[in-house]
Length: 188
Image (cartoon, rainbow, N blue to C red; front, side):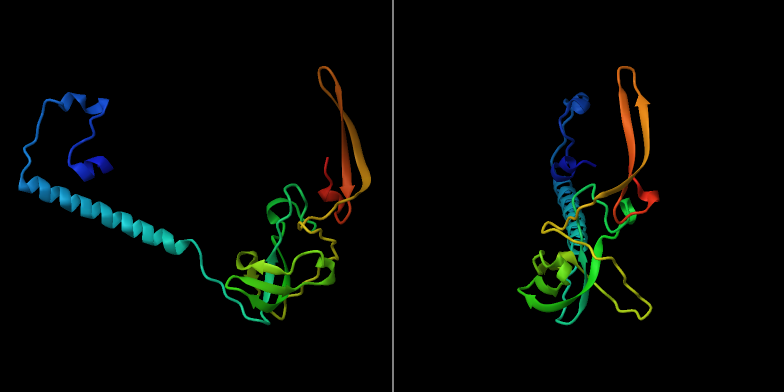
């Protein structure tokens, strides 16, 4: 039933229900009791849904000094992340060691010299816990990251050149290989 009908015990007077205008209900104790029960049922369902949603929103993360964490890396749209394009590009870099806790939800990290331009205090939402594994070998090339967590790509070579003919003009298409990327990741 509609929320209006659940709260007031009658259907909403919309054009759909104009044919029932002449009918009247006699208000009695049974109708009042039914309405109160329906209102209680609706309120309980709403409360259950709100409680369920409240606990799914955020989990409290806490780290200690000395723990290692990954840092969320979110460059601007269209920038290639660490040699990968699209969905499979890594979203986190690291691991980095936590130096200390700053406030309730901020941590100071020990960043390498390549990231010296980046502020070293991060909100807990930017961090993910690193679980140590002996077989885990992390090797990444040195990358110069700007203050806004972006980096520059430079063209290395022109791999292919085509002319696409339209009705009124010709469009030149060039396939370029970028630095830090192979030929399979060239853009056109």
